[in-house]
Length: 100
Image 1 (spheres, rainbow, N blue to C red):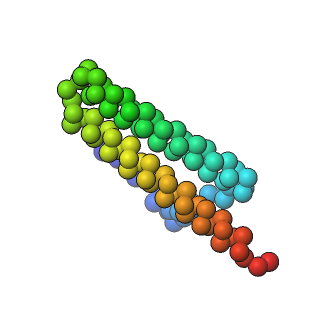
Image 2 (image 1 turned 90 degrees about the horizontal axis):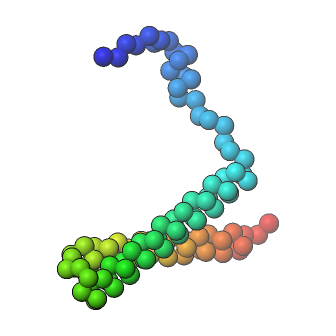
Image 3 (image 1 turned 180 degrees about the vertical axis):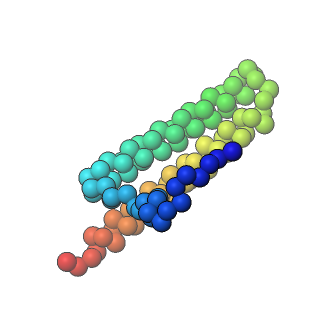
């Protein structure tokens, strides 16, 4: 059971206050790290799918269902990454077309 100790307007407003925005450089670093992580995850999915397909072809496993799921997950994640890249390129091109 929770006990509510502070029901003042100040405590509610403090809970709603927005944190200070990060400097642009820090935001760029976070975006870059997120992109690296996403690319690594897509790469790992591709490697896992390739390994599963090789195991099916070599007869090392009979789990065709699991292999097909891994292949589809890798395909979908690669398609998503390509679409993200396309949107980033479009945004860059739009910025470059802007008149200063």
